[in-house]
Image (cartoon, rainbow, N blue to C red; front, side, top):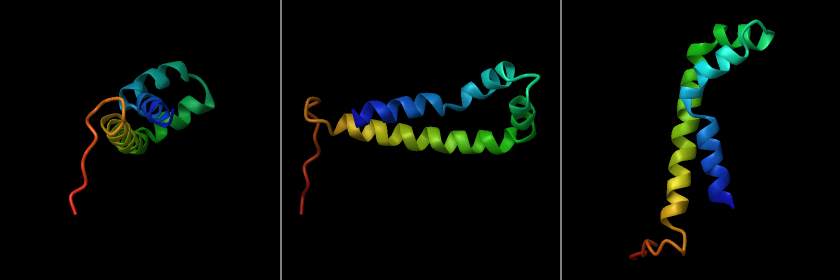
Length: 74
């Protein structure tokens, strides 16, 4: 379940959704705030997208049902 929550987090944090949010929130206080801090939000959303995506892929690749579990070599 954790890996699917990470995948959903990556989907929501995808920076390609920023223009969609701007259109949906146009004319509201949220839209004004979004347009004012669009550059900062783009950076934060990109970092969150990369982080969530990395963790999601790491969990998918290491899941027991995938059969691609990494072996530790000490």
